Image (cartoon, rainbow, N blue to C red; front, top):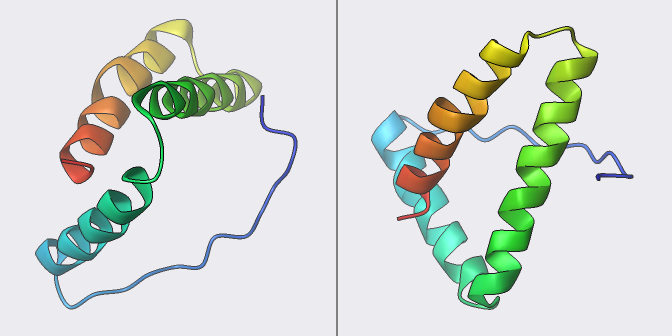
Length: 81
């Protein structure tokens, strides 16, 4: 579970495509430094934290499942390719 909150600076780009390319480069660089098991542990931690936060915000189990099971994971996988 996340125990620390940090400010995340907003990033801007002229287009979504350019932003995705920049993000992919940063992700590839950072991910090259960790093992597959560390990546999977991190992904599981993100899912757990997101699920907890959505529960606190009174999202239904069905909505949480859709967000975590589909949209968020699909976007993360696409950006991190």
